[in-house]
Image (cartoon, rainbow, N blue to C red; front, side, top):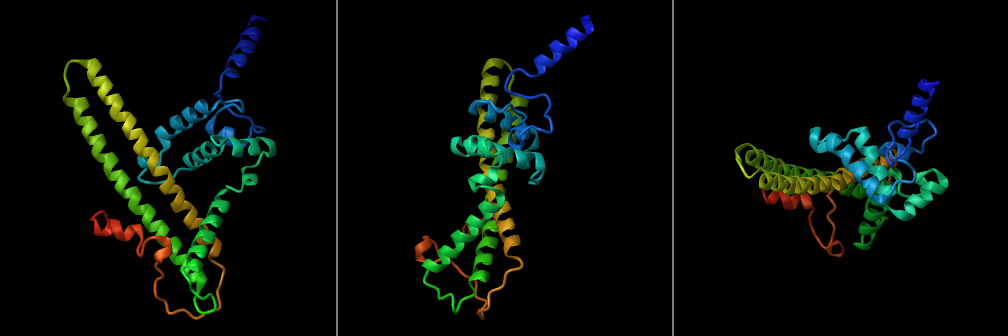
Length: 247
């Protein structure tokens, strides 16, 4: 009998608090991705994501987006939005919000087609599909440039932090406070990488969605560049390449 009571108390302890030690097959996917209860507060949701990101962020894996990080990022984005979370809790599906990966990719396709159309091109004479694909390919290039630029900044600050941690002697409380400040800044910089990884992933999905499509209009093959309506005549990758940030 005492053994059974101890087992009961242990099981009860596992179920307390916002975080889960393990998840069952019936657990909703997004909450399971973060290892949290369905009653978790926004602060608890964010804390769970930060915990996962510390070990699984692409910045720690040569830019590779691990499935566990991608799932945690998606869960964090949806559950931190009260409307999308309510829709997910009601339906059990994040697709119901229209913000799934394919929904995001479809949004990118629509954005680029719209930009091409408002630029005054004639869809009877211009290969709209090709131009859209070119824009998506530039999205991927631009994301790579931003990721590389942020990674260089992060690596530089990490080297500075390591030097301070190694060479600072005495006044340990001051040192700890300084290192904590730097770590906080690094965490913010690493978080800035996520949208660019996402944009790159959505653009790739969009290209996959268009892979089997065709457009029956001859095309000159000249690269499309957004006109005045887009506020720029060249891509961000061109800007950063000219600024010396290219690989």
